[in-house]
Image 1 (tube, rainbow, N blue to C red):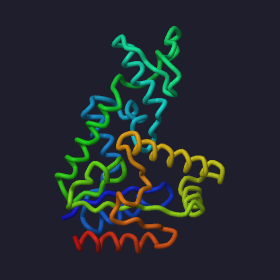
Image 2 (image 1 turned 180 degrees about the vertical axis):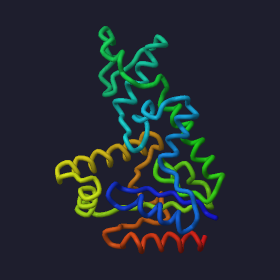
Image 3 (image 1 turned 135 degrees about the vertical axis):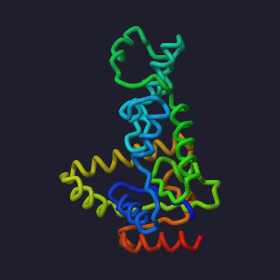
Length: 222
C-alpha cells in the first residue's frame, strides 16, 4: 500500500486527520515515535534534541550547541548574524547550557535514516519532520498538506489547549516559524510551497471528515 506523509499547520486538524486515516487504512501513524527513534540512535535523551525537532526548532539553540562543540575542538565560532567572530572570553556563561554536543548535520542524517526505515515498513502515515522532502523521490508515497484559515486555527487552538486569544496567537506564530525555519534550514525549501504536495486541503473550506475520505480515496486509487 502507498505511504502517506502529512504536513500540517497547528490548529488545522492535521493530526486528527492523520490518525483517522491511519485507523481506516490500518496504517501506523508516526509522530513522537520518530523523535524517540532519533534519540535512541543518537544515544541522547529526547530533551537533548528538542531544539532540532520541527515542533520546537530553535535556530539560536542549535547555533549554541554547534558553537560549544566547535569550542571544545578548538575551533572559531562566527556570529550567527554575520558580524564577525564571537568573543568567547566569557564563554562560561554558556557552560550550563543543558544540551548535547552534536551538530545539525548529525540530526539531519539520523532523521533521514529513521524516516526511510519507517518507509520501508510501508503502511505508514508520517507526520511532519520533512517527510515530503525525505521521501520526495518515492513514487509510492502520497504527500498531503493540511491548512486552515488563521481565524479557524485560533479557535481550534483556544479550545483544544484552553488558551486565551493572545496566547493562542503567539503559539501559532511560534509553531509556524519553527516549522518553516526547520524545513528551510534542513531542506532548503518553503514548507508552504504547494508543489511539494499531491494534495493541499483547507479544513476551513472542506471539513476534516471529507478531507479524511479524500485522502483515503486517493491512497486506494494509487
